[in-house]
Length: 114
Image 1 (cartoon, helix red, strand yellow):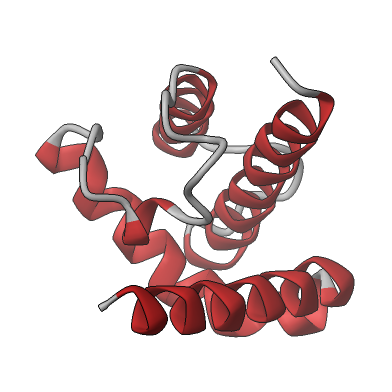
Image 2 (cartoon, helix red, strand yellow):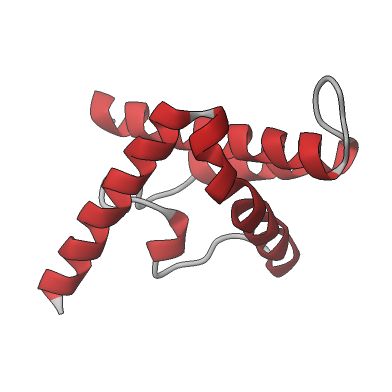
């Protein structure tokens, strides 16, 4: 596998873990680490990312044509994204800006292919 794909996979896993950690800290009031439910979600999300066959071509799971998350886990990760997404600029500004730039690129790419 190309190094860029591995870098992308690592960055995606790190971003999702940061979002889950922020969500858990603010919603579940954890001090250090994750509660059991958030730890399970983090492990599940990392495992899904690790097995993703579309990593070379996709940018974010929300843009993927195949949804590999179980429905229950998908709802949980959506709640995390909804809460943590807007707050990431305050807690992880570099990652948040990178995510916004990549989102805009993907949006333009999808509009040009239609």
